[in-house]
Image (tube, rainbow, N blue to C red; front, top):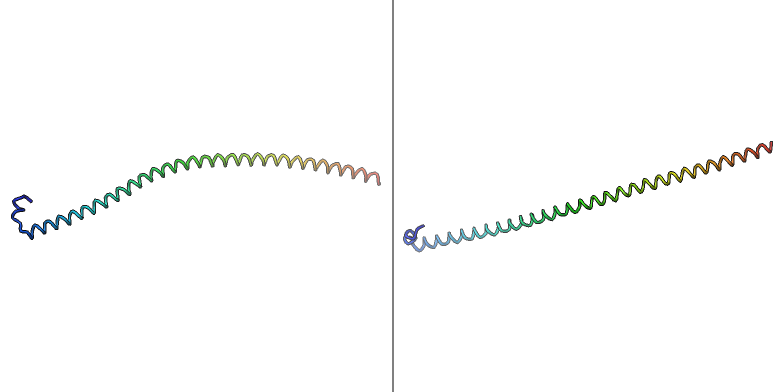
Length: 114
């Protein structure tokens, strides 16, 4: 509105115009506040995204370490299993030799009694 048009308005019309402008100002202030909140939320989301990316990257290292530890554990288990298998075979061989000796001795004694 031009100055000339404003001067032609009555007090009532000017007050109504002023009230309408105040309502518009309040509406825009509310929208501005909502926009600031949304911007703040997005900023937080972006910061959290960076934090999440760092966490994932960090967890990647943890997973690699866990995987390496698991591989080492499995290798140790296989090694101990092989050692136990060898020891069991030795015990079994010793037991067979001892059994053969006992059987041989028993046969000799049985021959003497005949």
